[in-house]
Length: 272
Image (tube, rainbow, N blue to C red; front, side, top):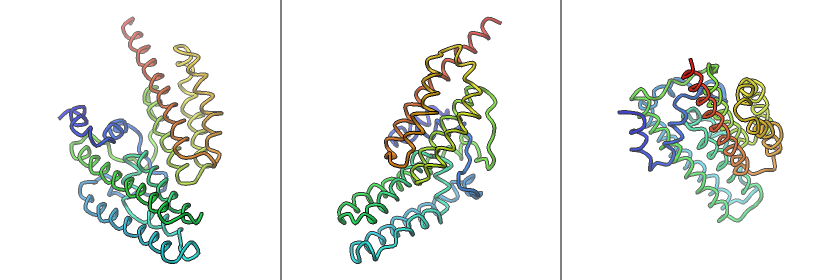
């Protein structure tokens, strides 16, 4: 089965396009060792499902405790500990970063609502968003397992592979920007900003010379995004959704840049 038809078949899942976009992306965990299980997803789907059910249950216990004992009687730190404890954490991180970021956003949504002494109804609303992100993440991993079984999903690399062409570099930049959102959702704005600066210096600067020849205004636009717009958004006060909007706008520009470079290469080959 061709990748395109496989994606169309699962288009209703909503996140299929994201997995397809990451099929050739460099997949590296941002949190250390990820475990061999990520390269054999199908064999671990049942355990991932158990872990998601466990997480939903444990997060529900935290909210129940808040309802019964109030803010002072509730330990919200355990929510992050629960999430980082399960293998599902790295399974979703290495296969679909946008949902990974949503899960972190959901965890902190519940955590901060409790710490702010919000009404229980408001905390439950945040909990519902978190649960939705967890189940969406499980769906993404199940779909990734199908890609993997058919040989359409590359094995996860534990060390970062350098892109060898300019289009590959632009794809890598897009993936790194997804990780910026994830890090910001983890409440690590400095780490997110560091990724932005590193990506600009070690990725974008390597392609901007060729890109200037195609669209100098686009390069100027992206330079401003990397050095001003996105760093300013990562101030710790901006919402994750607003940071994501900045990143998505940059990714649209990067797609345009990729198309321009591919067309220029095609014309060069036609000439010679």
